[in-house]
Image 1 (tube, rainbow, N blue to C red):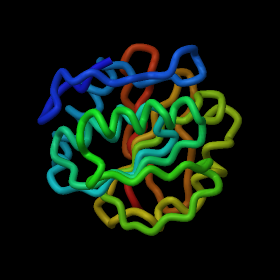
Image 2 (image 1 turned 30 degrees about the vertical axis):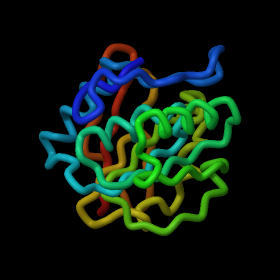
Image 3 (image 1 turned 120 degrees about the vertical axis):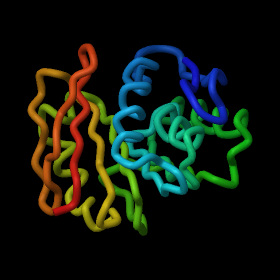
Length: 180
């Protein structure tokens, strides 16, 4: 797994062994960031990466011009990989790692972009919808929330957010939301 573009293009990212962490594929990350670029780009953006895993999404955002990323992840193996990736890229001054479950986070925004890649079963069961209640309050007026989920799952509904569109990339869906 590698960063697909920007300052850190082709740099390798560490991932924990096993299947407990499901990093976003290079193909999906390329498509996602192409879509985000067409919506205004990432230059100077403050990014919140939820269910961060290895940090691939947030680190890709940094590589493409974001100024700061807050990573929220609770799994120990994923946190080790995430911290190793941050150190290997030398971006410690541009990130904050919050080792807590998303549903227990207490963060201050605002963020220009929120990336959420939860375990897919949490989208289907509604757990991610409950965990992200009030997320709109952490977003700037022009911010997007992008939810990665299985292509068969319906895009959730959140108070304060308007579903903009869902795009499919292989077996993955990317649902885009804006503040109402």
